[in-house]
Image (cartoon, rainbow, N blue to C red; front, side, top):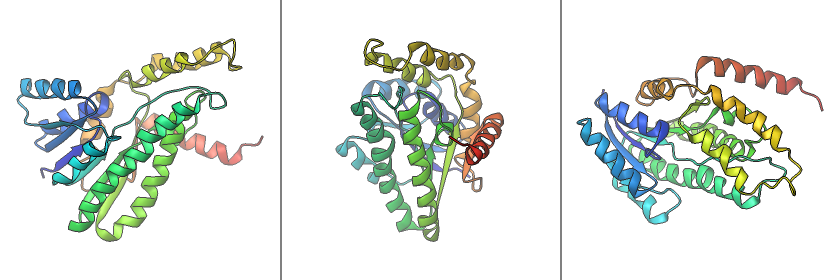
Length: 261
């Protein structure tokens, strides 16, 4: 059954891939992008593929942009827009942490509140938060992003309990590390403020952690999972993908309960 699906942050990466893939499956897609240049690129790609996707610029931190959400009718709202930046939590400048929370938590919740009100009024709808494996695990030097995704997990679980009586479903999708460039760019950002002469965190420790980025997964695999889960009538509250990451996270959670300091 065809659904109308609203996706934020569809100008690149997994969001863009999911928007195009869902449109190919016959769903009506409202895809929003942070910038006008992303909008133009997505419109051109959609046209080349013969897809009729509604595309417009929506910076979720912009109040005027956010108001556009209420003009549309949709069945599913996918809160995908996010930014990423790394750094040791004991030293990362607080303006960088605040910037991540502003987009990934506050603006995301504000956009979801608009969708939730529409869904409550019609007693149906589904909200999907694009969380992350970082919402469950804790990786050194990815703390600012990890903190925002842990917040999203709490928000999603709470809203699921609060909205179910109104016929509104809430869920999360938690990708592992996929090679979209998102993680690589975030790793680079911390070196704009990091100074080995002033910071006690060792560069070699951060570089060692970044070595793991060489073994990221193929984004097409995650996009296929999103195309499956987003329009589905029933699925798990939390979808972690790939399976090996789910198993790893469950093991990590168990270890936390047993961890001593």
